[in-house]
Amino acid sequence: MNQQEKVVEIKDLRKSFGDLKVLQGVDLDLFNEEILVVLGKSGSGKSVLIKIMVGLLTQDSGSMKVFGQEIAQLKKKPLNAMRLRIGFSFQSSALYDSMTVRENMEFPLVRNEKNLSRKEIDRRIEELLDSVGLPQTINQLPSELSGGQKKRIGVARTLILNPEIMLYDEPTAGLDPITCGDINNLILDVREQYKTSSIVITHDLTCAKQTGDRMAVLLDGQFKSVGTFDEVFPNADDARVKSFYDYNFINS
Image (cartoon, rainbow, N blue to C red):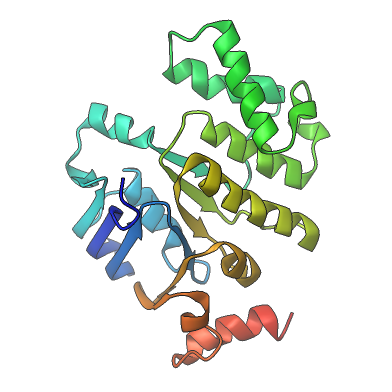
C-alpha cells in the first residue's frame, strides 16, 4: 500500500442527538502509516467520530469510508470483517480482571481465529508481549500491573489480530510523565513494526507533539485546524486553538 494512499476518508460527516448537534460537516483523511492526532474538549465529538468509523453509530449524512468502503452501507458480516482490520486501544485498557495476561491476550485470538494450534497461540502471545517489553507479566493478573503496564498489555492485545488501523483513546491519561513518554514511544514503535495507520485521541499535547504526523482540532463539530504540530500550534489564529496550547504548556 502506498504511503499517500487514503485508508480513511471522511466527507461532510454530520451527527446529531436530538437537538444536540455534535458533528457538523467533518472532513478528514487518514493516510497509510500516518499517525493522526485528534484533539478537542470533552464532548466535542471525538468518540462519536470513532464510533461511526467502526459502525457502532450511523451518521445522519455525509460519508465515512474505510479502505474505500462506506461503513454505513456494510451488512453485518462485512462490517465484522472490517472491524477486525481496526484495533481499538481503550483508555481503561479494558482487560478482564479475572483473567491472566495470557488469557486476556488469548481471548480475542481464539474467538476470531478458530484453527490455531496451541503452539501458534503461545508464539503470538509471547511475541507481542516481547514487543511491548512485558514478557514477564504473562501469568500475572491485571490487578498486579501498574497503569502503564496495563496500557501496554491493552495495546498488545489489540495487536494480536494484526489490525491495519490502530485507534488510541487517551493513551496517556492518568499516567506520570515518564510513563507517558514510554507510551508515546510505544505508539511510534507499533507504527514502525506493524506498519499501522493510527488515530490518537488525546488532550495531551506532549503526546500529540511526540507521536503525531498531523494534528486535527475538533471545535464546534468541525475540524478548525489541521496540519503538523508547528502549523497548528502555538501561533494559532483561532483563540480557542491557542487556548488549548496555553492550557497544556503554559498553565500546567
